[in-house]
Image 1: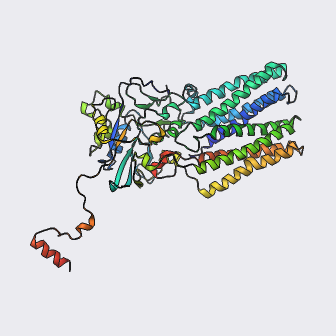
Image 2: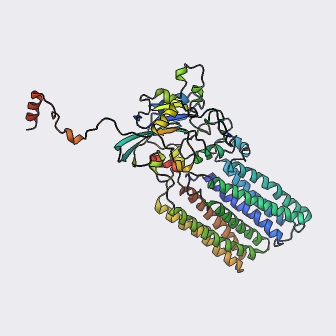
Length: 311
Length: 247
């Protein structure tokens, strides 16, 4: 599948934003956040800034962005519509959380409840995004049991790194957040390696014979319908060289997980948490963008089988 | 609505039967489809650099050719026109966030309302057959309409109220009709010849059916058997010529 930068930005940025929102809600429940009037609203608006930037980027993917509002209507059947609705609905408890914190403080039950509600809506939105991909039967690398938990794990991982960075600048419980970031980095790394092992062991869902409705016989492509690339081949027939794939996978392990993990674990031990939390978050941001690029580039679509390409 | 119509008693199930035994791979169906639809329901269709080095555009029908080798049939060419199959379980419809993509309750045709399509391309990802193509000029998705503007068009003579691809096929490899009517030509052909759903394992339940290639009913002599052009001929003149030329 063609990796479109607008969609890569969408899923990476909303992962950071909604992940942060979820962690702010959880940390507020346990009273782990700085008890200042501005911390909560600042953190929440940062989270909404990231998620909104992602959603704006996603409209660049549309052929008719001015009609984007229509995408809310078909929530009964479409995960994309559900994602749009969940994203819009998350803003309500999130802004309520920020306002309640500003006016009444972080400890009162209303603020805590709104925080948890915003956090749950944020995770729900990440879940809807994941289900857009997981529900697509023709793409075996997406239509499997890894996609949903993986998106939630990477959202939680990027969110806690962003919270660590903010706590580092506001003298909060940075070592605790960095500790959670370390654990999530390990989980994320294991999940990614498990995903790669899984897709490498998959067999294609269809054969050229079954695509043509033949129950037996050997089929080989002879003549193509057209000599130049068309929409189907550009969008669904994207190919990535095997040696590039190996290099990029190593890069993802290093930049998305190993470097942030090392920085977060040192920060958790109290070694320069302010500076290291910045390194961790920036590295994870770049690494997860490459991870998302590979998620698309390595995905194959069964329609490519008609052109004799790998599926 | 992108939810599928409740299929308790669908009136009609319109679709195509394509005979892979008689299709000669002439691309006339693809060309006439493009010609009709460039001025029809989904008009205009992009057609960039049509006579240049890298032509590009939207086509609803693409004709592939494959080499099939099997025990019954031997080795032969199979021409395979690929277009929307108007599935009974079309994920391209249910993934649509806007309601632009829909399946008609009356005849099962899968259509796009290009006035409300946002061009997110998700339907093209959901289609395993590569039937939907994105119109870069208009920013919306387009697809086969089963020539909805022909089959119900009372301005056309009745015999022309079939899809453009069917009307033009010189080898009568394409048939159009109602699969809910057991007496229709398409139903009769499918029950007589048998057919498998394309990518049956994915469960999209395509409506269009492809009739499999058949074993030839005449004896096909192998090329080696007729090495000498005059062999089998009783004409003395040809036999003499053969002897002279064979020296």
